[in-house]
Image 1 (cartoon, one colour):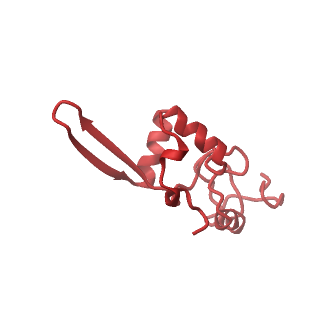
Image 2: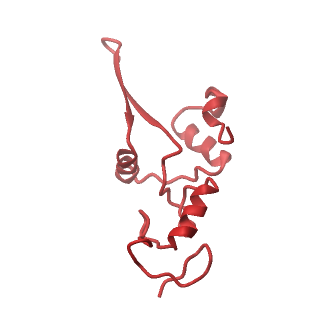
Length: 120
């Protein structure tokens, strides 16, 4: 029987204890407590399983006409994009967020401080 990586107790798959997105399984109360503590990555593999704290927007701009269209992405679309581009990142660590943004050509200092406020 698998072990819950949060409490280290045995866990079996039930209607309440379902595997999260990456396939790892935890007691429902353990993973809920994990989420309530603001953690949104799997305790075992660190893949993001909860994007509810974040909003992702996609802007497509026509450089010739200067017209653009921006859409907000829903949770499932975010996961699909992460899967398509094989993206994984640690969103619990500011250094890693800074690194991710640098890969996208953006600096953490370019962002409004309110966007990064996770305590408010």
